Each structure stands twice: as C-alpha cells, then as structure tokens.
Length: 158
Image (cartoon, rainbow, N blue to C red; front, side):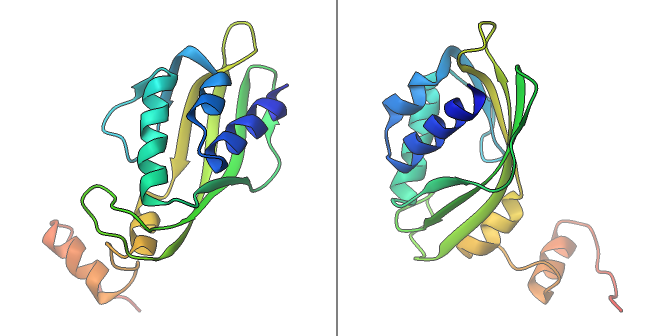
C-alpha cells in the first residue's frame, strides 16, 4: 500500500498532474521542504508548490533512489529530483542547467493508513543552489568569501 502511494505520488510529479498528487494526500496534508518559509497545508497548497517547480523545471521528475522503509504508518523514501532549469525560479532567470538533487522523503500516513498525511523532504538546498548556478561550490574561494561575508571568517585549508 505504501509503495503504491509513493509510486502514484512520484508519477503525479512526473506527469505534472496536481490531481494525481492530491489523490494520494489527505485533505489536511502537512508538507515541508527547505525551500519553503513555512509548512504547507492541504493538497491544493502542495499542488501550487509543485506548479512552481514545473514552471521552473518543465521536465522535473522524482525517481526512487534506494529501498523504501516503512512500518505501516511512517515511511522514509530516498529519492532524487531531476530536471532542467528552463523557467524562472524565485526571480532567477533560467540557467539551462540540469539538476540532480538527492533527498529523503519522510512521511506519515493518515489515521486510516490510506493517504499521505505528513511529508517532509530532507535535501541539501545549498547543493541545489550550486547546481543551478546561484551559489559557489563548497571549498572554493567564492564559498570561503561568502562565509567570510556572513561572519564565519576564513579558515586555512591544508
């Protein structure tokens, strides 16, 4: 059942089908990811969030990236989000870069065990910024300069 829900969720993202995503989510869904200032509530809010993703990454899809773990109520699913940045993203013009973001979806089913009630996406938002081209790669002079500007100082590396 859980694998089927996750398969349908992933297929909805790949098909750009907000209705298919909503069909596997509870009406009082709670969704969080590092790109959101606060959690989303309800399938409609998640659909709007997905539509922003699809506008920026028209070929976006979620792919399973390892074995899923679940106990009948809670689940953990390693995935990767892949797509090409071809549309505006939070004011950033398209870069044309292909992005692969590794993530883990941690979720909880509703009381009936039939729909996704809570989903949290854990991912490296900094690495996503590097791949899109808005942040310097870790360990580079640009990354160290950015840390210095933020007040973390410069470290000598061996």
